[in-house]
Image (cartoon, rainbow, N blue to C red; front, side, top):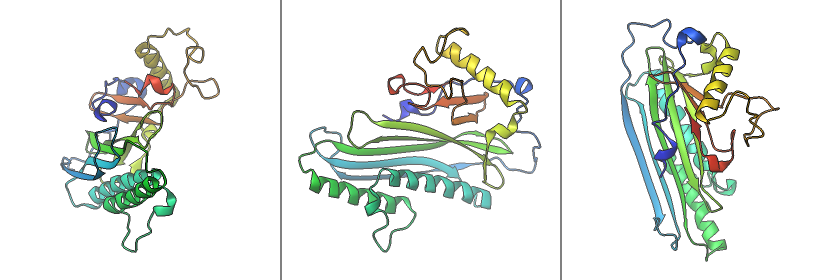
Length: 255
């Protein structure tokens, strides 16, 4: 269900020569290639998969660096904290951390979510359907200098439709600290113009088409970079989440 919103995306190649983009510059030849291992957590309450039955399901699968260096640990902690925060974002704050043993871990966050769900069931015993949250995380690109990482979430807690979004993060390969990818572009205006040109091509729009008249959401009437763009092995991966630049029915726009 979630995979259609996540990797692999179609990829746009923006040449480093055109944009002054070089995430591999200053390569340290002593840096070892990064290896990853996968972690998975699955929890379920009741019976999910049947619209006429109540239930709660949480699933997450993600990779983290296998090395035990400070950088590897920092990235692993960042990803786990991201997952915990997003579980809690779907949880009534009344139930967050109410147990003495509750900590900033995935299992604890799920227990908070379960408490909120069971309370909802008490208040609305006739409510059918399942609460579902699924998160996937994977590396997109690894170089001696940076690590590109993507996290995707699907959630449905009732309502008209599920919510989906994808978030990209760029990490320093040595320290594990988060980096802003825009720092690797010598001309951000040229970058924006090329992204808009390719966006119009992907969406089958001419250079003369008014994006707002075509139903796209613009910031102050101007085209904008998405919150999420990242380096891949083929170029710069651009991703607009649902509602970011277009209505939900359009889905995510990636290239």
